[in-house]
Image: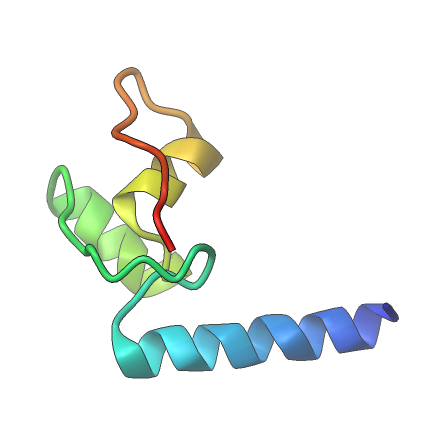
Length: 67
């Protein structure tokens, strides 16, 4: 896949996630966050708590993402 196609796919996934209030990475609709900072991060990255833990590292990650 060409890089431009990957970027277009990523942008489309972010638009869908924002419209449906789900995670842009895994599609999880469980948007319960550990703290206010994690909730703010969702509005920047559109990642659920589980994906934030995977990306940024966490001392105690919660279960794996469900689609």
